[in-house]
Length: 114
Length: 110
Image 1 (tube, helix red, strand yellow):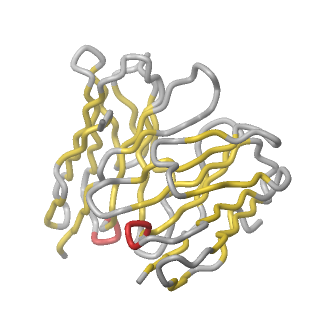
Image 2 (cartoon, rainbow over the protein chains, first blue to last red):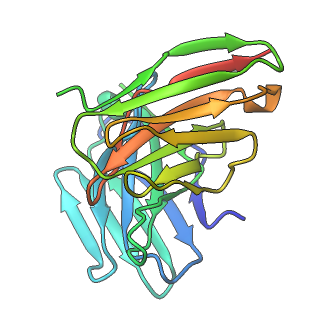
């Protein structure tokens, strides 16, 4: 079962445009929602994360929007740059049990054209 | 600090061969994880170790075994490799959040 669904699978954006990646989750026990960025040949690295007590979190050009009632969250990349070209994964985790297990979405390959 | 180190970086095996993937972290983290990454499927948890001395199955454990050798090291073993295990394998560790990932082992099984 896929508990975290991510879309689109791939995305092409012009330099300076806005990139938007969406995720939906099923388990209401999830309480930690990170986004990871992965460059070719490298492991994923944390980009930004949010907890469900806030509806939005912004770090530089990257913003997470969170809709608890709809069980959806999204990543917005403002003023997209060619250096943002990478694969992005959303994920979810629940604090109970403190195992820290992450459930990942399927990934989105972003290409930012110069 | 090296962070999370995985060895080897690349490996080609024949069906039925065995192999151990190594992972070590130098951040004094309690928890460690093994994932596999396949196109269109994201990262799926194979096994994890919440603390030294404990291991538990994740989403896709069949065909794999793990050993938490000490607090630093967490190895993944394929006893009899199958073509379906061709993948990129990532090890991660954490104290709280977030998880920190190594750069992966690219494994091909012919």
